[in-house]
Amino acid sequence: MKLVSALAAVAILTAIGLAGGSSGGLQSLFGIWVPYAAVAVFIGGIVLQVVRWAKSPVPFRIPTTCGQQRALPWIKNDSLEAPHTTGAVLGRMFLEVFCFRSLFRNTRMKIVGGNAAYGSSKWLWLGALAFHYAFFVILIRHLRFFLEPVPGLISAMDKADSFFQIGLPPVYQTDAVILAALAFLLLRRLLEPQVRYISFASDYFPLVLIGAIATTGALMRYFVRVDVTAIKQLAMGLATFSPAVPQGVGALFFAHLLLVCALLAYFPFSKLLHAPGVFLSPTRNLANTSREVRHINPWNPPVKVHTYEEWEEEFHVPMAKAGFPLEKEYKE
Image 1 (cartoon, rainbow, N blue to C red):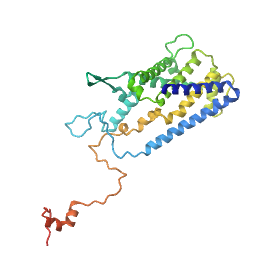
Image 2 (cartoon, helix red, strand yellow; image 1 turned 45 degrees about the vertical axis):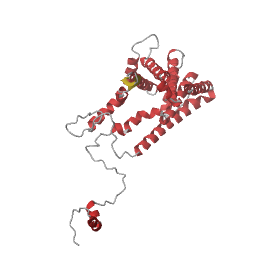
Image 3 (spheres, rainbow, N blue to C red; image 1 turned 135 degrees about the vertical axis):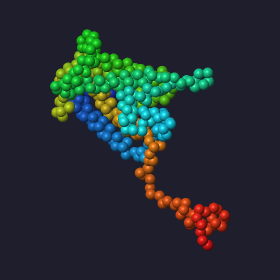
Image 4 (cartoon, helix red, strand yellow; image 1 turned 90 degrees about the vertical axis):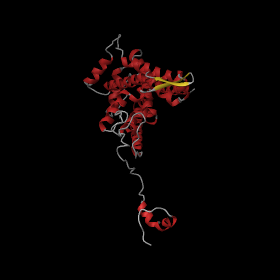
């Protein structure tokens, strides 16, 4: 039912995009105003969330439980799990951002003979890595629609992505990779009982939405003829704030564009926001120096201190009568 809800939502969006693209009177709405509104929601939502994270107090270092902190010379420190220098923190962030290191250590647990058995689980890491890198290349590749002349780096990436040419137009490897990765991530949620139990419609929706975006994009490239020149004119007009919808842009493109706009507007308010969240995570961007340095909470209110000497000075008479030992001698 949760998957059906996600499929229904994406199907409705696709139908609206097709209907809007087929109607000449609505092409300006779906080709100009909806994309601008989606970009505004995307930027505003990201800024709002980042500001909210930045305002969250982090008075103390939050060490992870994976590594041993540096404390005494005879205790072996794991410099990547529990870094105590800025360089080591940068190393941990690099591996986390580019290699998904924490996901690489993901393990599976099964009950075997009444006991818990743990094993490696690298398929999730591999699927996530393939999806994110394919998505990144596709995103960069699309810049050729917004730039004129097209930078050489983007052209080179385009050629490298399609070096294994099968017919015309050349087949992009990333198109096949992202569809395969999305299918794997979706099947994992459906076929693994534990993952399916904890999955909500909000877990299925982005997978189905991105799958629909990739599918409509592949349809336009390989099966349904569209006017690429007109699409580039529209994209250049949007990028230069002089938008106009030219003739010849097919309805399928408007469906593709509306799905992309839905993803942009959905991104800041969904689990997809983990991308910038990694950089503001105190368990990732702070050195674990809880044992080396005394971290004082800057939000602590001022406290009136009453030392033992002052306390004994104040109560020395009743303490002496009760027979308590005193550190100082007091005259009668």
